[in-house]
Length: 506
Image 1 (cartoon, rainbow, N blue to C red):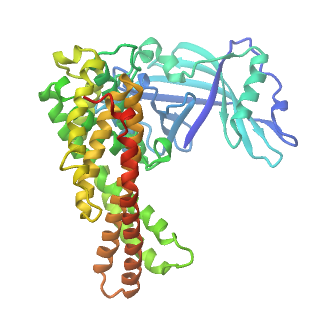
Image 2: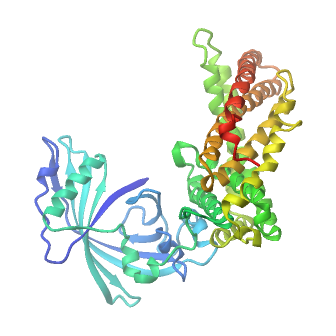
Image 3: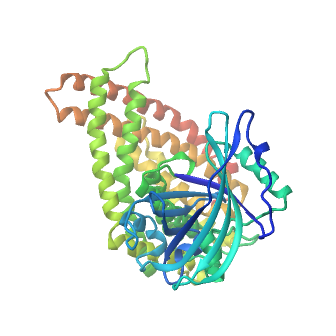
């Protein structure tokens, strides 16, 4: 569940205005009886969850009393996951969701917050709740139940309505004297300055005008570590990641890019630090890769099967192929979940947080980025363009030769991506053009793998003649895509290697 809300600060003298004008024609505002909510928040001793904008709480009286809230990249929007469970024992599933934050440290009660809530529901004429406005009088309690602080705040939470309605309600509240508040959760206000301190995971901050090579390394590491750990709970929940891509895909991409960046920046980072980290990232990427591959194949099966409406395939046979892939996916996701629960993964998370905080750099990293970085791209670029790379490609070459060039192309593209933010427009243009090359080579590889997969699954069931025929027809469609991508490749490569894109390379 995604929670979206706006907060407003008010004092005790504030009078909640008439909200009837915020409901649509025929709708109404429904006042609910006041309720008292007592929430106990758990965290590490050093408040790792609170400092990261997350929380784990037990709230008495809720149907699902245990709740985890996780921040998103959008202020005011959080993932909210609730589960049943006894008062003193948080559900293991919720504890695992915040693994990337607590990193194995014990979770203990850190504060108790009592809220007297007066809620108003903004409804349409059919009774559907569009938004909820709550007036919360909050009391912070110590271990003995004594009051140690209090405050009042208003929250407007989006339900079935749109964001315009939230803004409309906010306008009415502000006209009555409410002040737009920072999006600070109640338990963070209750815990005070310690909960507002910087999180353990250092976020990318952008590059200054004249960065050193080390600045670029640090920014690249922080960007991918943040992406990887942000998708950890989303993988566990099996929900989409950034841009609608699966969380498994985003987490795998982060592993690959971070490994590639450490390889590209090898002269700038200490080998004894980077090599073990790259090895563990390779392990995690491999575990995620099996799940991602099954996901891609299932999506591709349906697209390929319906690509020609004038020549439909046997739907039952397609369903049986999908069932085989679904079983692969279930097994792969089980392996992912097992890996994310392991001590090995926990150690990797700790190492990643430390890496984002302070990558271990060599003395060469102090050099200006414009002088030190172009040469780092030379090696992957030469592998891609050399006699064993694109120059050796033949339209009739076997699939694995094309796949080898694809891998070299991906390494070169990642290397260019890593250095481009600190270099010229030409570097950024090359990065975009290489993305086009990778699109062609990626589609080529996906089609080739899919063709082999359909035939392999059918071969496992020789008695299923309908599946054999369907798999053969699917494979032919995929091979047609392979030929099409080989035809497109020269133009994509020509665009990428124009002088105005490559002039900055040594």
